[in-house]
Length: 124
Ligand code: HEC
Image (tube, rainbow, N blue to C red):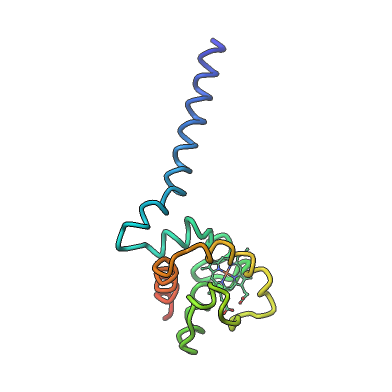
């Protein structure tokens, strides 16, 4: 009986592990695929959804607010995510956002452009 319980646990463990592996195993495909999904990067590899919701401020400003300001000012989210441009949405909270550049600087230009396009699509 104990053995069966143990096997079930091992089974659950392995299936969970596979799930995270498929989520984070994406870069391999991204290198070759033509279309990178900004939405997938935003909620997956980028973990941006931890602080940015579409319409509501949580830890970071909402995507809608960011998109509105970037469109108005015709600014580049790609440059911001490469740490090549100053914050224009909420400079007082910049330190919190800065921690993410470790992730975004690892992304290709294509991935950053996909992220930018995804975020800008929220502008009304
Ligand atoms: C730990 C929380 C957190 C995470 C995770 C996070 N952000 Fe942010 N983000 C913030 C905060 C806080 C601000 C407001 C400070 C600022 O404007 O720089 C912000 C601001 C921004 C801005 C506006 C910058 C500006 O000009 O002021 C963009 C664009 C942005 N985030 C994109 C992203 C993307 C893309 C990701 C995922 C790769 C991400 N964020 C992940 C907290 C976070």
